[in-house]
Amino acid sequence: MDKDFDNWNEEKKHIHGQSEYLPLYHEREIRWCRLGVNIGFEQDGTGAEHSRPMLIMKGFSRQVCLVVPLPTSTKKNKYHVRIGDVAGKKSSVIISQLRLIDTKRLDQHIAILNQEMFEVVRKAGKDLL
Image (cartoon, rainbow, N blue to C red; front, side, top):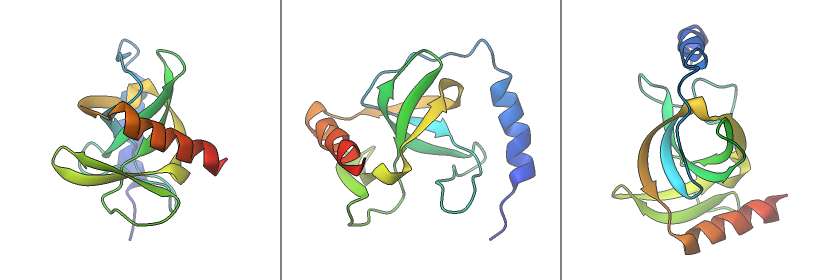
């Protein structure tokens, strides 16, 4: 399947240019994130916005945070952690796709993961390393 890197590159330039956009965010939030078109097995965003739901694991500043993606499938393996229903859909996170992002990529708020489940995800992330 061909990926449209050129179109995403233009969108990425627009996102980067939004110097006034620094959203407030918190750990445990699940938000849409403009991930874009990526290489190989890295998680891509989908749709016109090239977005995907992401769980915010840790905030480092107003500019950067650590996130994990919520895939559309709920596989059973040590890299996928089921987190229950999010916006009416059974969901999981892919711990192996943990990544640092610029907060300009963050978009609309979806939900907040409960503290107990967040600790399960956090422990899985620590165990991965």
